[in-house]
Length: 291
Length: 280
Image (cartoon, rainbow over all chains, first blue to last red; front, side):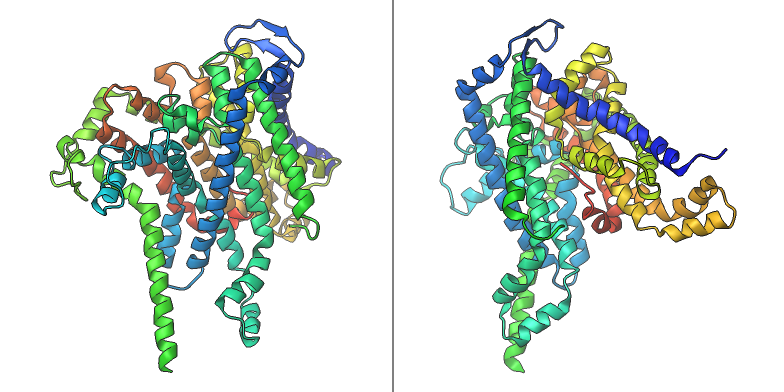
């Protein structure tokens, strides 16, 4: 039996396209549709309410708070991830004994289940028995144990944990690129009398431009929509209110208040913000070359 | 020569210091988890804390197996993740082969669609996904979970496999075809062996993604005996007194399969990374 290449190609890609459309694209569109309804999460009844969900959120102070917390959380973790990741990648690009070992270990936090990252850090940051408070007290940096999971420090804790969990992504992406920079460029810069700092600014950074463009893009999307790390830190209890980002708020509306319509509206708004900001990002930074 | 030598050694020393800090920052939390999980209760809460257990014990693991359904969760995780890998790989390999070996109308559009959906985060789809699953009546089944993972892993598996397949020269296949092999034999004997490392790496990434997931299980599964590890472990916090020793031993046991796989694929990692191997 002979099948034309055209047909064979379409035949082989069909299952992928079907599943992606049915299980990813369709739910997103269905979510947009749901956002115009008042819909209980468990029961089938639904009532068309037009833009009421959107208008409700405009006047909902919890929504604006979650937008603020979400933005603060993503911007601060992205900046820190990039800085820590970049330094680590530059270090791991140097030759030293045990380098491969360190390269491997540095990636661990990114590979483990989020729930493990959370239990590790909740134990380290435990206010009574945690090692971090013990060390800070022993070194005389603080006089009283810090309540890391309390309202004053929970955002700090969350940021530390998130940077720890996700900076390896930056390390690997940047490291992969660093290894392809031709050494000739550095030699030429040295001949021209450039010191280490100038070589970094004028040789390394321009070469990393494209990879950083992609890394910042992906990390922004994923940090802004990060649910599990944020949610698992409190699981809705304790100082949860002080780290209630947009994804967590959408989850709570749907699965604790059973307002699937309002939850979908929040997801749609999140999607809208992402599309708007990525478009802007592309316009601002990707004028020249392709990646 | 002298000044240069001291400069070099200062630089070398700085590198070692930074490497040590980096190593402690990333690895120490793991070390502490392992150490805690082998400590008896009184050592866990002692101040000043011991770096290593003095009285090495397996009591935490005993409690984990006796007082919780850890083994059931483990079995569920294994079943769901493995099934998701099988489905994803079967569908994505065919798709990626098609995208790299055949020309047809709309091919580039499909590639863009895949890249676009690759950026979807779980939270953007779970709410409508949940409502739909409820409607169809398959909520609270492993099947729903497997479908969710397959769909969610497809874009990045396709993207990654596409890159791997692209790196296999077309001429090899053409040569086999000219020699009279059927397309099927050409794929089986020429392409598959060369693509195998890429396929294994992609399969492991898919496995890790499914194994690590929390949100889909939390939302789609309500029966305790169907839960997987992430949710099972997270629920250990619901106890009135938090049993840190038991939680740490559970955390250690979930991490082991992931790290074992990770060490296995490490050499493929850099190749895969640039093409979007990992997400989250």
